[in-house]
Length: 147
Image (cartoon, rainbow, N blue to C red; front, side):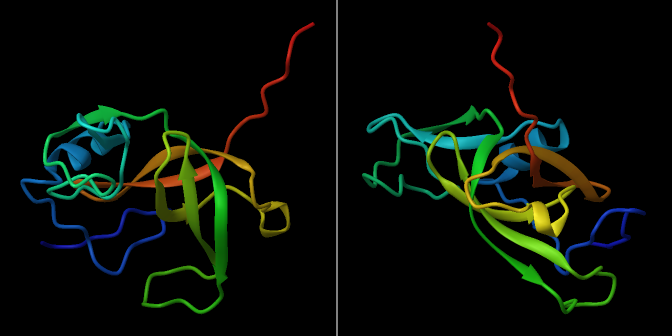
């Protein structure tokens, strides 16, 4: 696969290669939707897609659309670019999705001093190659309660 970075978007050193198992995830990402596997036996979500549920090992699962919301569980700031084309520093994050699973991603559109464990995040998809859109996370707007 030929890799030509998209201007203004942080590249990735290796592109994901969609497989029969992961193709629905990548197709939905290109549409701006986050899909998660959910087991039909134990009803739990898991990530990343596997042949069997990571909770009960059942092989009967389906793709379902996720909310795209989560909280910052952990992060690190990478100060040295791992490959040409990367702009450092960047934030590697573990995001705990509202549906339960955690996923590795990047935290974007957030100043380093503003990063807080537990902060509310929402997914945004960034096109990194012609056919690949990566889920990255940004701070979620604060919801104000009306009185």
